[in-house]
Amino acid sequence: MFATRLSGLLVFTLFLLVACVPAKQTTPVAPPQPPRAPSPKVEPLPPPPAPQGPRKIGLLVPLSGNAAPIGQDMLDAAQLALFESDNRELLLLPRDTGGEPATARQAAQDALAAGAELLLGPLFAGSTSAVAPLARERGVVTLSFSNDASIAGNGVFVLGYRPEEQIVRILAHAREQGWRKLGLLAPADSYGNVAIAAWRRELSTRGDAAASAIGVYPASGDPTAAVRSFLERYGGRVGGQTPDLDAVLIADGGLRLRQVAALLAFFDLDPTRTRLLGTRLWADDPAVLRDPALRGGRFAAPDPAAEAAFRERFRSAFGREPTPLASLAFDAVRLAATVAVPGRPLTVEALLDPRGFQGALGPFRLRAEGIAEHALAILEAGPEGAVVVEPAPARFPAAFALR
Image 1 (tube, one colour):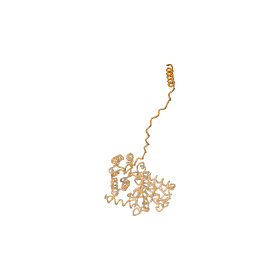
Image 2: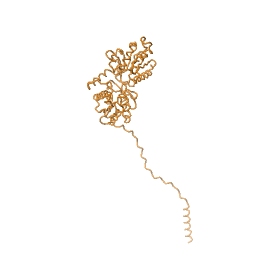
Image 3: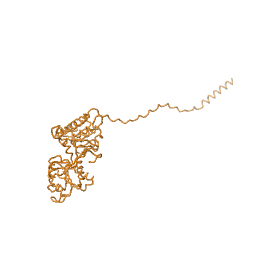
Image 4: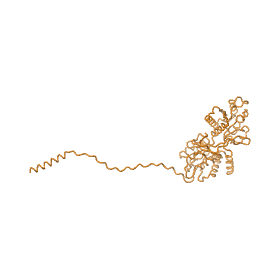
């Protein structure tokens, strides 16, 4: 019995000893995590699909108001270009810009709402400035018919024949002829201001600025005093010594040009020693080309043979002579027909093709800063009209040379 008690006591004691030993602590094992999916591969977005069906092009021209005759000629020239094109998927959306920027803005809204991918026009700089923000909002380029370079850029291209490029062209010709001492006579108006700025910029670029002379005459009224003062400053007394200039550029046209040329002749400017130079404005008035005071004068203008061919095609189609600005609408549609082809997105890169495009009056191309460059000839006024003394380039060089 005693042994039994002892055995029980030992068992109890062992139990107590085991109970007093601290339990061993362990960290619970985290449950297995599912394998992480690989990061998705980011692919570039594909280019937007090219529009299907006819390519819609807005044509913004004044079909009412004072400029309606010009606008009608431009519309007809645009239709002529479309007829002569091989692109049968081009759809013109003509809209009347009237004579106010607000009307032009509404015309642009209508064309864009109808799906226009490109805007051709408006004609005037003010209307173009009103239209451009609407086109930019939709990523649409505006090809304005203006020649005002101040509105170019930021989605706007000016297609007009700028006085700047004409001055650059005639000055390049003068340099090739060895004429270094040059004078400029210009009216005190917006055209004259542009001509003076272009003249100074070009001569400064070529290092000839010190050899130039500038005279400004009133935009209205009698230019006699200004012309006389110009000759006295750059040649001594009037009526005797010929001014010490190789050439004088008259940046004007029409009656005012003829008045200035007559004054130069009256004050004994010798045209055999001092050549008269000009811009395309000389070609716009047949009376200018027949004026004896301007005979032998040279100016930059489009190829007259190409101009005559375009007028003949227009006259055959519509029974009347086109305004000179009609060729710009023809060129714009010709460009659009080239770049807006089925299955190909219309991009700015396509518009800036350095090879250019064939226009009504010769090759032209667009530059990234928003201006157009035209191939220009050098013409000389003669008894039978203008004759070509230096033809326009048949194609453009790889680099943009004209400013």
